[in-house]
Length: 324
Image (cartoon, rainbow, N blue to C red; front, side, top):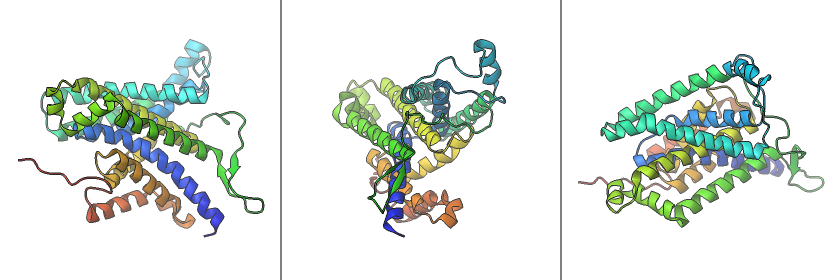
């Protein structure tokens, strides 16, 4: 492999790894607080991409129910607004966060109050995921959606990181995705480590009962955790949709499974571990030879299998201590 291709693959791997990282952070936040996996996170990921698509003023395909509804209400198969892509992405992610809060109210809180077995909560979140995916298909149809061309204005399709005679072109979209991912990761790290809210979240993650006895409002922090989780999922969904397309209502399911591989690889409930795991899997996928690209999705689960054999607690996770 020559130097040019090597650098291209590294940059591509960092871009997709950044998306895996922020998506997996949504899983990690909920797991660290409640010790459960939110299987609906993949559906929220998909929903965030669709919300952004709507807010950019893009048209709905004819098979979606929204096509007829928007035509009757607005005289066109789209919302009568056209937000800049960056603003639409943030608002779309916020709507995904609110959806995640609603999921907590419907699928998690009632079971938590009854002291239900965590397995029931897992099944409940899976049921919500299936329902959401079907609602998305009903509203938008099953077609592939693509964001408008040049969402960030008149920018070049690729940026050259090489020198005259040895160009190293990298897609501008990939650079933007990596930059947005790093801003999100840095912002979340700052929130967790440098604010009172973040320290309260860490306290609840360590021992929710003790944190509650010390006066921390655990119910409010659980709601905040689900909002942040949904927001991160919505951003990740939009970034993936920007890079490749919104490949139908089920495209978040594959990323949901891959997100699980990321958090197990990095360490369940460990925020830095989720970031490291995302980049490890992103870089590993980037170096899959072209003739085996059809098997690229197997890389994450192969790494997961090897990690479970060698270090079950993950790269940065701590071995669980059984309290007696």
